[in-house]
Image (cartoon, rainbow, N blue to C red; front, side, top):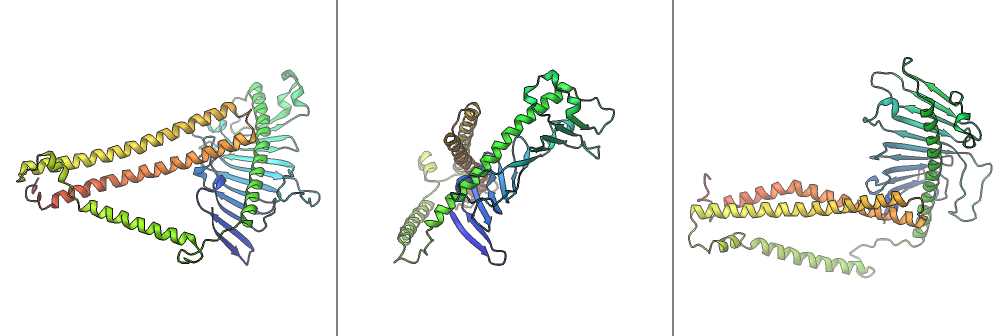
Length: 389
């Protein structure tokens, strides 16, 4: 849901702010023109996205994405496009007319479980030149890093392994001149894997372009059907004001019920358990205190266990769905994939809420326990008996 629109008259920049729950987890959209392939910045709630996307920055010649908390340590991806030879007038406002991708750059954070010389820091695919550049992470005791360049020969896929001369294809900059050179078979396998990665990345960039167009299409439709939020005090124009008053009445009733519950004797059920003793001795006072605190402790534990079980159930269902997606990804339609992403976004939102509730409960549980202990200590019926106990 759109929450607020800000217009900077000096820079002519428009900023749209969205509440949580927006499709694609968009939280901010900054732009000058609503036309595709113009300067814009999209910011996302990364915790609610499966791909961990933080932001997208689009220009006529680039599409830059930033990520966080991904299992593959990807933090940055930029696709560069060839400039259009002439201004293309799209037949539909948001119909895709793909730009030619000439370069894709990806950067990765350091994975400490891998040696630096096996841990890629940056990979650059020069698609029109058929070159691939790899830069690995730098060892802690070195001032530079291992680099490799793959110069892909024409018709590579039609050649046998024996016909490929890796010495002519791979250029390596070794940090340690005494290091054992990498075997040709390993370099060949790396090159073939990179070619597959390049094909996947091209499709990933196309998917990102498509997602941006879908977002712009949705926003165009929403602008035509904008509904401004009317003041809750404008009772003549706004039905929501009446609903607000009804909600206020309901909240007041709940508050009265809560106060009535607070006025109830919290010791009553425990006194009944002891047979409503006429006189409270020190032994009875100790029993009442221990029973009250034990009951409170158990209720706090039960609440934590309930939230934890719901959290684990949601996490398990998400993991099962992700495994199913990995097994069926190739045969899935675009609609199936969009439904999967929507499902994952919804489940991750619920998991995030449960995690917040659990953390909040862990913070407040000791406070509630100590508050009850203090209330018992100051209770006039028990205070004298529990003194110095």
